[in-house]
Image (cartoon, rainbow, N blue to C red; front, side, top):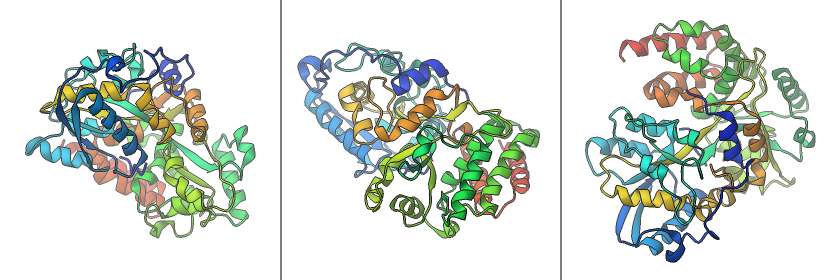
Length: 453
């Protein structure tokens, strides 16, 4: 996906079951004929809607959406004027909030949408979309096709859903199952297990961990997971929320930082990782050139690196396992989970048409492409999980609680994330900052942040 990343927990039982298909499939209104005027339930009409997308035109998600756009226009007469902006789409939206014409529909990660729209209360509430039926099916969108818990995580100021999700993401440690066949039933579970494995691979002349040093968003995964495991979900978020900075004195946060520091000092990363540019290391990991074994990356990893893995002379089978359990065990039953979805600006000129497209795209016939073509997870239970994501499915199923990307920090405090957290965590992963220095720097940055907010 090349998503160079972009609080409250989800309810584990219902959310997991619906997200990964462990409950019975939702009832469907026919054979998925959403593009047929007689069965789709879409009202006839005309007009346009302007959609600014986080995807690039050549990405599989864009191709899945384009197929839906074509069917939507044929079914409704509404033309979708799409601009494939890429990951910086919300930068364009932010500029247009004060001057310029806004799109009718936009998509991105839920935290980024919240950061963009919430301050100015500029997102349209989507309760009516939530209450509507999926086009061409006899199920409601929220509480039927999509778990209710998903849409309640991101709200407008009047308490309505801010986004409607169509893709689920978590991060895992990826590896070639043909290289480590025993991991299918016995992956490294604890931190000590993981370190022992890394030492073994290093002794064999391998460079266990792949990471591009120019990518602080990916470096941040190491801290995010270590902090969640040792200090527990929301510990990082709570530390940044504490205006006094005192919450950074939590010894479990220091333990997490020391674990990350130890990965660097033990030289587990590829020797040139500090000087490479994304996606050099993940490409070399996939094609075998770097002698790297493991890649900590989002659930889009198989889709993004597959073209390079196919060039590997050894047979490649994607597999993953979750970050190992922490020594202090505050968050061993949690996993990261965040959402990509649609939002509509309040000032959208064709909001009704945008809502119709959301209802249309969530039909199983079209949403399934996120799984079958883009190789990612969807929030619908009756859409099969890609084979490459079976480990991710297990990771989500086994979790009892969830935490957002970077524990929700970058979404809730975007300026702090950009100016303080990401630069400091990158320094930690590059060996330019010690664990103690990282905690001290984060504490001071928190205090300074709240002086001006």
